[in-house]
Image (cartoon, rainbow, N blue to C red; front, side):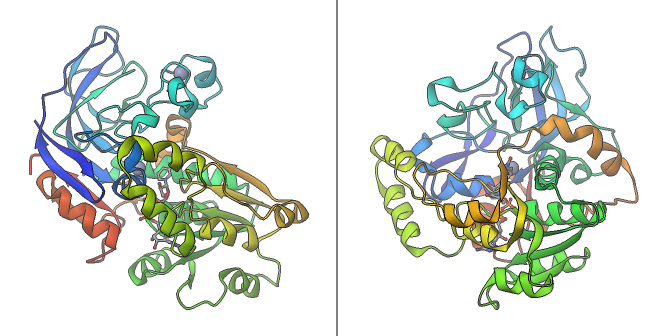
Length: 395
Ligand SMILES: NC(=O)c1ccc[n+]([C@@H]2O[C@H](COP(=O)([O-])OP(=O)(O)OC[C@H]3O[C@@H](n4cnc5c(N)ncnc54)[C@H](O)[C@@H]3O)[C@@H](O)[C@H]2O)c1
Ligand SMILES: [Zn+2]
Ligand SMILES: [Zn+2]
């Protein structure tokens, strides 16, 4: 089959790889019909190279049709239309019992000191072949696959794999008080949907980015926007809109590849240039995060407020303004999304033909799988108005 594979920094290709097979009784194999390219994939494309091996199959946002199931898989059957959560969880361990599916103890990657395995996401997360491919082997399929109705186009449901639960969790973790306000830093797909969910729940939302069409998309969904390339100081701009206080909560939907912090960028670039094995320990031990978005969040949130980080960070020794965080009395929550925890709340919203979250207004490009190399480059460089890119095997 054809699959999108990693070959080096900014080098992804479409290769022929062996078709996936059922290996365990609780596996399934699905035929992928659409699959997203995510901001998290851009970290693999750029800074997480030291944790990748050449040929790794990328991708973690698939929707498709069940081809085959092992004997222990009973809630879905061949022919069913399914979305696959990006984290692989068993549904029955201690952590899954707490609905902390991103910390599943059955798939936990203990040898790397990490949480649950993820599709298509580095040795740190189990090096599981991903979903930017014609077919995908789904481990723990007795629990993971989410059955969705036939009929509506893929993009009505595809975002249940990652974008929607990640955004729902970002808003839940932000603990915005009733009728309160939130700043969303970063208006990529995660920021867009976090902003819309917060609006849907009745909150005031201020969105920050520096890409015109991303600001424009947020604006048309009821978000007040600040262009970070215009504002001298984003936190000051938010304070001016909120009686000098800052918003009750801040969602960081940017992560470690923020614009800003040039020193850290240099360190990241150097790390990315080193050969695989020597760079990996350096990357995780030396602080190479770009903390621009996080420090803005700390400055922007009102005293006693909450910061919710959905943007991915990866360093181990990054300096934080502890005086400011302690004195302001800030709460910070973060982590990978516990995808299945939020599906019951999201399903009625995506099943509603009125499309209350506007999921049909997010994807800007729907391309054949073969165009993955161009898609990654366009999405990273934010060219051609790219906000969300979907790859469609078989088209
Ligand atoms: N926690 C999770 O489970 C989870 C799941 C999916 C994605 N993510 C992470 O969420 C983040 C966003 O993902 P995405 O798909 O929306 O990616 P994206 O790269 O499209 O979005 C990031 C946005 O941030 C903007 N930005 C950069 N620097 C900024 C700054 N200093 N201030 C304001 N905006 C800035 C960029 O212009 C861009 O629009 C990534 O870090 C991704 O890895 C986390
Ligand atoms: Zn993703
Ligand atoms: Zn589990």
